[in-house]
Amino acid sequence: MHTGDQEVDVAVEADHLARARTLHMDYEWREACDEFRAAGGLPALGVEDVERFAECAQIAGLNEDAINALERSFEVRAAEGHVRAALASAFWLWQAYNLNNEFAQANGWMARARELGPDDVGGEPGWLLITMAYGRIAAGAYDEAGVLLARARATAAAAHDADQLAFSTLLTGRALVKSGHLADGLDWLDDAMLRVVAGETTPRATSLLFCAAIGTCQMEAREVSRVREWSIALGSWLDAVPPFGGPFYGNCLTYRAVHLRLAGQWAAALAELQEACRSLADGAGTRLIGHARYELGESHRLLGDFPEAEAAFRAAAFSGGPTQPGLALLRLSLGDVPAAAAGIRRALGESAGSGARVDLLPAAVTVLLAAGARGEAAAAAEEIGSLAEHFASDSVRAAHAQALGELALADDDCQKALPELRRAADLWRGLDVPYEVARCSVLLATACRGVRDNEAAGLELESARQDFRRLGARADLAEVENMLLQPGVPPQYGLSPRELEVLRLIVRGRTNRAIASELFISERTVHRHVTSILEKLGVSSRTQAATHAIGQGIVSVAP
Image (cartoon, rainbow, N blue to C red; front, side, top):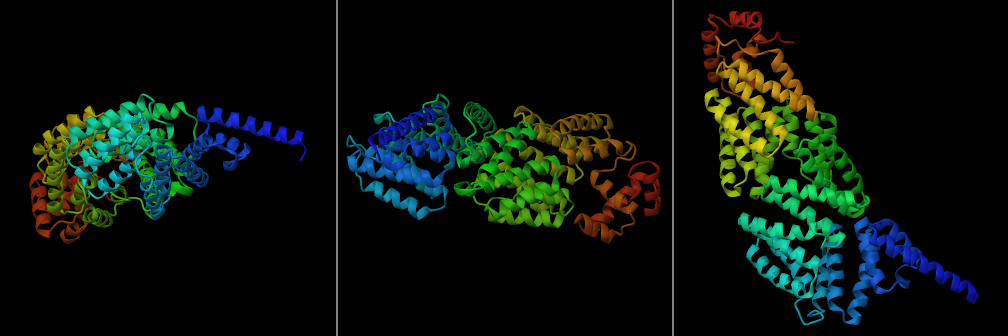
């Protein structure tokens, strides 16, 4: 090649490199990767540009490029004696291999990192301490994790390493939360997230830290207010950067969607989850897609899109993600009570840890009551009460009060149900969770009818109807519309909700044995309800009760 051609090639590569650096600074990570390749790729890049390439590739989900660049930067930094920079590359390699389910290689890189010894100024290897703390937290050795993280924070502060300091601070909070020291743990989480929101951390760390903080607040601490606050901050950050795809982006979208759904922005949540599933469908994202698909199923279920919900839950299961309690609630909506009960019982039997159980138990109360398993439902409600004391969380307190209200309704004690359901509604309202408020309104309407206050029942149903219509909750809206069209039992009859169920089945010609089977209660209980129904309606036979119920509009004619 002529010297002139070589000079032109060098100039062209220099232009590509300059553009790559600019795109990196402008958060155009995927385009930056193209320019780094056009500038000659890894063999032609200096180590600082190799590290920029690695960050861009990792954020954009280009896992192979990221791993190659990180391995190159580790080797160069280690050979130069720049231990701190080499350790940072080893940490991100550890993250990349873990995300790809290649745990042996992840551990291998940390073993290589240990061989480097102290960092550049003789300090402890902070990133290595952080990875060790991850393992201690996973093993439940929270005190040991705390000791490691305190050393990592000291190293990070001495080195002015913002990423390392934010990681070690957040993990300190997570270890405390998981060990039951919620207030202290949340303080540490807040400290870490203030650093993130202030823009002190790099984009790669920012995306991971947002997801870790929101996930801890949502699943471990049940802190709805913090989930909301940090999700809004995450949304602001995502809106400020170009969409970049890949696992980091998809995971961020999943967590933001959970907040949007809680806040009642269901259409936006659905769109976010669909995009999250697309971003996580390939490569390293497949490890995270199970969670996104489960949340997508929940959104479809709440919207009343039952076939779509079924498909999403199945896809979540195939991806190793959760299916409960959403699948049990879907089965209940479709009328398959035995399948709903079997699913929730299986999930409860497998679940370990307060965070996992508090997700399942409120649904378990609803499903088990529908299955006639009043004793199991009561035990689930009692456990929610214990967890409410553990978490000191308004969302768990609300779930407990709602469960107690459902139990009282199942016992035909509407007067007892009312204060519990009112308390639950007030707590959900304070947390600004409109769907749960509306569900409480439906339960309150049932209780009000049971105490013969049909006017109050109507007001509760109208409120629920407005909320369900705004949310797009089609199945719930249909239920409320049906209740409004059949305004219930005239006050002089005073039939309980369970007696109404029995009466509807009498109208349909069911025997006591058939009613017992369908409602999952004993024949003796059915006989007691029938006797009460005849007495309240002032009739002497089942036939007269059915005729009277249809004539007075108490129940509709069976299809």
